[in-house]
Each structure stands twice: as structure tokens, then as C-alpha cells.
Length: 161
Image (cartoon, rainbow, N blue to C red; front, side, top):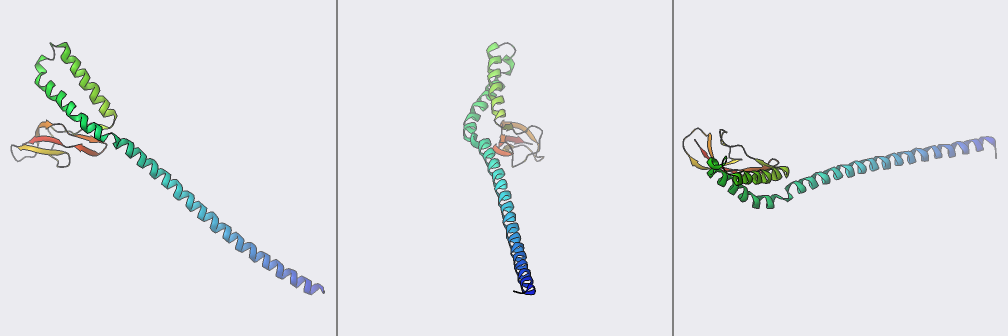
């Protein structure tokens, strides 16, 4: 075989190998980019699952807390009617302490009391049970309302002026 033919054949083989190499590099790049997208999707899904898990934990005790709220209401009602006896009675101080413990435990679980007295009426947080004027200011709280996080667990029942 002549040197020219061998050189021409070698150049053809080299160009074919070069083309094959470029094609393989392009394919490898596509695979790498696909892997990177899949990994990013996976990491985003992991974050989403963690957020959902935190929300489930946050609101898992909602039903139990709703069942405990009437007990808290009873403490409030009892203590409101016995305020004048507070200084004299040691057992009343104990009842106050028990209510405080219960309140702190519920707050630790994410429960927040809705502000009422002196606030403007807000239908998202308040339920009007009596209206004594047109100003829309809350003058009295008939029953406390509560939030868990930003979600209304129970609206406050109020009297507005």
C-alpha cells in the first residue's frame, strides 16, 4: 500500500474517531445534565417532604387541643368569678398555677390566644355574639379564640361596640 493511501486512510480513521469522540462527549454531557436535573428534583422533593412532615407534626394534636380548650375556658370562667377571693385563698392560687401550667403546655405546642379587647373586629379571628353600637371595636370577650401557627383553631366570641 502506498504511503498516501495509508495516510489518507489514517486521516479518515482519525476523523471518524474524532467524530465518535465528539458524539460520545455530547452524549456524556447530556447524561450529566440529566443526572444534575434529577438530583436537583430529588433534593427539592426531600425539602418538600420535610416541610410537609413539619406541618403534620404541627397540626397533629389539633383535635386533642380542641378537646382541651373547654377545660381552659372553665378555668377562665371559674377564676373570673373568684377574683376577689384570690388573695385570701391559697387553694385558689393553686388553681391559678394549674391553669398557668396548662396554658404554657398548650403554648409550647403552638397555641396562641387571639387578641380581643380594644381590637377592631376581624371576621377571620372573631365571631360577634352581641353588638352594642357601630364602631366595630371589641369591648368584651365572651370566649377566648386560639390560633395554631397562623391557622384559626377557634375564633374568639366577642361583644363589639
